[in-house]
Length: 138
View 1 (cartoon, rainbow, N blue to C red):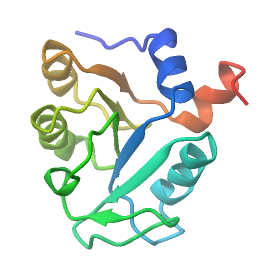
View 2 (cartoon, rainbow, N blue to C red):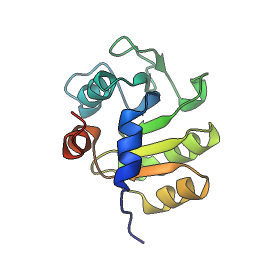
View 3 (spheres, helix red, strand yellow):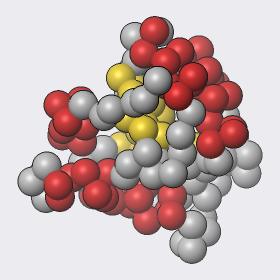
């Protein structure tokens, strides 16, 4: 099984305002999640940080888990190692998220299949900062 990202899904996710729950986002500016969350916010998305420390980042509230986010989540943006991504995808399904975006290098085909079967859009092994320019969105 091999995942292929749908450019129409990517375009819709990056252009339709919504709430992105960024899993793995902390106040550490050296982490990729920090810069990409800011990028997504600058595209017009609302973000929330999901990290065990529950820190506020870029003025967005922090939550210890996806279950702690008490508003509907449009996209769960996953910045964890591939071996941890499946659990996050399962949590995204459980909270009723509309989509999961597994960041560049984060690959879990079985989790992507579970998400698709649950009706979620899936983007995997790429980054909004790569896709937005490629699609002419910025």
